[in-house]
Image 1 (spheres, rainbow, N blue to C red):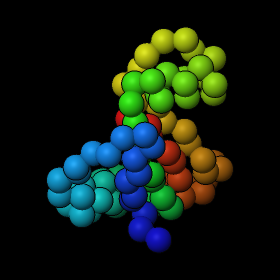
Image 2 (image 1 turned 120 degrees about the vertical axis):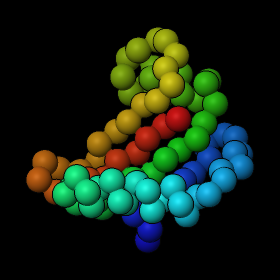
Image 3 (image 1 turned 90 degrees about the vertical axis):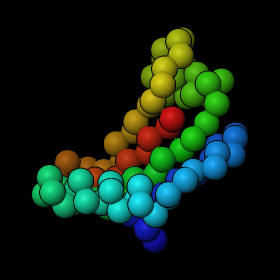
Image 4 (image 1 turned 135 degrees about the horizontal axis):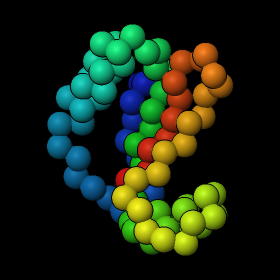
Length: 83
């Protein structure tokens, strides 16, 4: 499995230079001396993001990005980023 992936929850996005973006994120982790397990970027609509905000964070307002850290302290970083 690749360490950086992209998903589309309820909309399709033409993501240009996907491989270059994956390499860029992996390079940042190397330069910062952080271990990366996996980051999943999920592209979604405002309504989808609002539902996540309500369901998981108990916030009833729009936001641009929500991140969830999925790894234990001291373990390689695993996360989901909803955009």
